[in-house]
Image (spheres, rainbow, N blue to C red):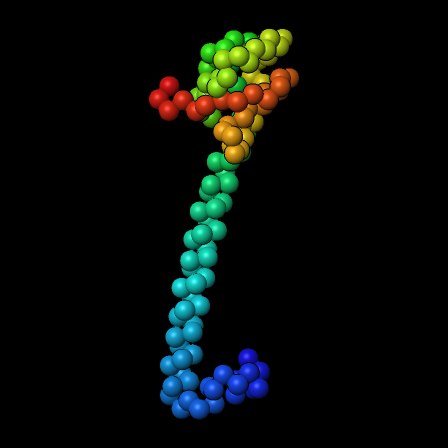
Length: 124
């Protein structure tokens, strides 16, 4: 704070003791604010980690049949969301998988396939 800003805020009227107490309060407020911002950033980062998942299919992927269940090597299990989606790729052993959580739900992209919507299976 410049001397002019200090004077314009009326802080020049405070006693040295009052200035010391004000400074201590501002330091405490700053620490609380920094801790809250750090906590918020950590929460956002953990949510972001859930927005994109990269893994591999645990086994062979034979295509989408309308009720396909896909188990990934990280332990997550997904079921095909749209029963009308059908896709028969060449059989692929342990293809790479990316699951993206977007506005309309989860979308999975497997190596060699088109992207399709999936739902997480809570208790496989």
